[in-house]
Length: 394
Image 1 (cartoon, rainbow, N blue to C red):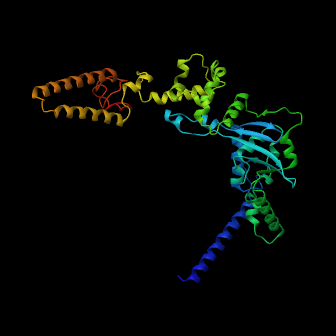
Image 2: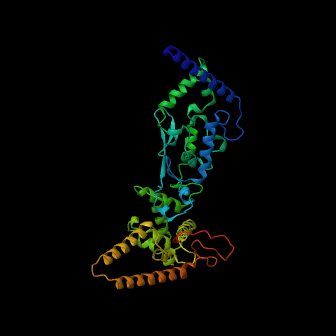
């Protein structure tokens, strides 16, 4: 179509979408949110209030500590600790542990902001999970823990319904938007009374631990802060060292990076009876052992698996290639006679027979009994074929 006709249709479609969005926003102005108890539920759109409720609910999994009247630390290692370890390879995947720092600042315009190093407020326009963790101090009541001044103006019902109107409300929305642009990198804005409740009393002794935070948790956070980059494995090694009665004092001057290997981490409780594991370390140890036991028969010891089985196709390929190269070297020799070849064939047959007998002794014969690692055989004469387990040949 012609340019003038295409432009006209484009402008008409844009106007139609704007009118539809305006009507939808006006309908939402009359709706009530029954799924939230927050004091802002009647002023925010459903998306904004849902984000706030979600972040506020996750605060209970975070641990916090107030370092001084204007600084806090917040961290959450629970997400890594609760992850089920299905394979020992997961311990080598770097999943980083982070401790966030929050700071209360007062600008020259007498406005108070709480900034966080996670940057959640700058990205989403609502207070981050770390902010809600430091407000959970039994001083700020639930009905005043959040107000619309903490939220970006774009989440207000009035903003979506009346932005751009040539009215007094429309002008106030323009001003609110300009303030958001001006202070968007400062963090979450709080009132002076709210800031005073966060600071606490003058006679408080620091550090002050949060509700669900212990001194062991605080020492873990300190360890993570001392590392340039701390992974889940590094933190678990630190926990194992802390749980050791004698090694904790002997290794105080050693580097934490010189910790045990993965195999030592798995078997440390079996080799050293002095070690006392935390519940979380015990669970992780059981998960790692179970994942490695899946590759072996239930009757085979874990430490014997590497010697009993060829785990990879590359190992099998290298072994076959070695045998074939050796056979070719012998058979290509001019002095080889038929008798020598027959004798070699007899030796190979006997060796294969011995290998097969050893395999049957370890894993059971084809069609052998229950709880045996079988090939594609049957248990008895009428039952269905057993499913081949991991680590078998064939």
